[in-house]
Image 1: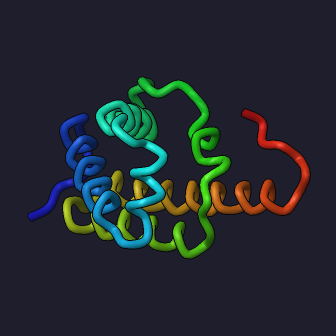
Image 2 (image 1 turned 135 degrees about the vertical axis):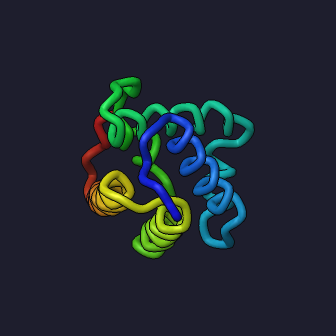
Image 3 (image 1 turned 60 degrees about the horizontal axis):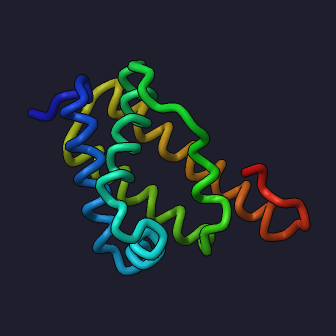
Length: 129
């Protein structure tokens, strides 16, 4: 039986499993690997802190999650695939209130990031970085 997300170890399992899929995905791998390069350990650590703050309400993440994504060469297709992999990962590993919140939060972030990226692509305004 699956359990809910309740600890930093659960967060690490979720993040590591998800980004393991992303790093191998035909659509997403090049975008992530080209941006992150050899800084995967730092990226994963940042993602642990982000999700720990969001899901466990243990405030360890400080920063603006949109900024590193502002100029990525992505479209709706990329966000749909990101969310599909994220949803699949959460559902494979967990169930419960926090798991449901993780999927909701992931979808909400993907929609917001996509909207902001499209706005900056189509307008002369520069992202606030």
